[in-house]
Length: 567
Ligand SMILES: Nc1ncnc2c1ncn2[C@@H]1O[C@H](COP(=O)(O)OP(=O)(O)OP(=O)(O)O)[C@@H](O)[C@H]1O
Image (tube, rainbow, N blue to C red; front, side, top):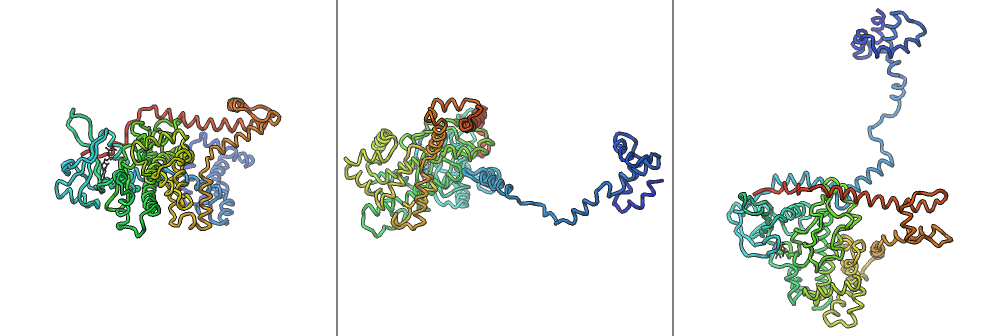
């Protein structure tokens, strides 16, 4: 047989004989038809033997089928190591990584949620109601009651000790809002434990059916007796804080310089705590002296009461509840997110879009405004009472939230207390006043972030005079970044608009609106570019808002509360 004649020449290929035998048995069909052109090429060798030979060649002659030349040629080329690095590839990978790590942090968020949270569950000790003996009531709000508690048995004491906590604890029995607070506290414990009071455990109380609403129990270390509010109510403030923070009294005469140093330390600690929260995508939304506790153990101020907080990574508690906001300390925008993104998107969408939404709205600046008011209260004793703070808020509103304008209004007729406040702020060439005014501003976008505030020269020991050339450059850069670039964008668009029609002296606002609607027109390139830019901008905002609304309108369960353990 012809094929057997080829057996020798093709047998160097592994498995080739087997293939050949299979080919020989193959019935004529569509596949066989595909060999016919090859048959024709052989120039009329149409005998059975010839066809068999050609069929065998189709299968068997390796260089015809496999293009050995190619193989040999390629084998002479340098070996490919598998991964080819190109400039666009690197740029793309870098942008993806930066997006995933940008605040509030999609990638670390996933890791936290799906790895750390579960791992923690496996190793942390759990508690039950019976482990605690409730004692003195520390506070009571619309959402629950807070008590100091001791441990009921040695086992419970051991478990608490395993968490590094000795002595008493604080127990909060909360309504359904407790679920949010447990979530936030657990997130904080994993991401920035030192920002808030040490959280030990949270669980849902198991209740017999029909015995009222479910209750959540939250357990913290008892950090200390005093909140910043309690300390500020004393006539001794800020000296009563000095001993607490530093352990001993500074060797300095009493006066504004010394007071400024103490206030600086408190501000640094609070900004540090806020920066921790914001870096992990959490906005507190209820920053006030009552929610700042002094931790005797670490000698620092820590934040408490995360019941109104929002987790922007996954959209938890994203819908702002007005009644949760304390009007005395709330920023003028009231809502941390713009009203254009009114409610929480689904988790995957919230997670994917969170860096974009964060940059669009800068929700962290809500807390910065509240902290700015605390800064003001620490420097100006007369603003420490509720009634005076409310009056200040009214005055500031009348001044369009411009602190400079407020100063011009009250300074000429300032009493000694108010004057002293301005003197503290004016130390070191007014660097404190500059930081304060960059925190208390009407527009969230113009307010400084916690991280930038920590790098502000106010916290430099020598003040402005002690700044090196580089630090001065940094300060100028900082001041430049404080500008409102939305104004700049508007100015650029305005300029484009104005240059649109030279003879008519630019477009009017009505014409601009028209431009947003119109279709491109022949022969007016500049006008069409402007129209396209405006249309694309409008389309992006519209698409984001629509997708948000659509997703938000679907019923959202508090899916994550399933992870909160039952008692
Ligand atoms: N970890 C803690 N250590 C010591 N005291 C604490 C701790 N947590 C809370 N407290 C005290 O309990 C009080 C109430 O706590 P918290 O603000 O969390 O409760 P709340 O029900 O939200 O109260 P409110 O509605 O008044 O804000 C605080 O003012 C503080 O005095």
